[in-house]
Length: 104
Image 1 (cartoon, helix red, strand yellow):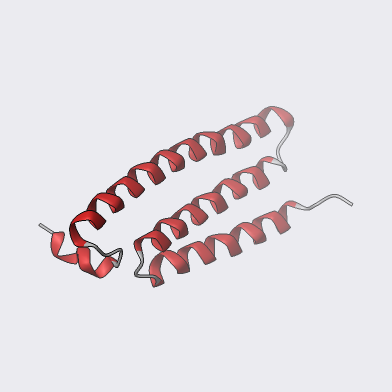
Image 2 (image 1 turned 90 degrees about the vertical axis):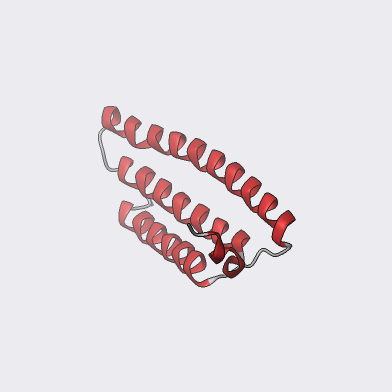
């Protein structure tokens, strides 16, 4: 039995919703970053799910785009974590509300 693309898209939607809820509802910066990463991975899964429905030549594009997205997400996670560590050294808190006075 072959897995249909609709089920892959439903799974991607559920994972994206979980990531979005975590990113919006949490105050801990680490959880916000994990929620964003989860949402990005759901989008990558959606790309691969749609690529499965295309012919072989067009399917390659749907499988290569997530590779670049994963590379960008890894770089974003490294930079984001470095920023959080530097801010934590000054504020001694990972609560996102303590960073609200940095506007300007």
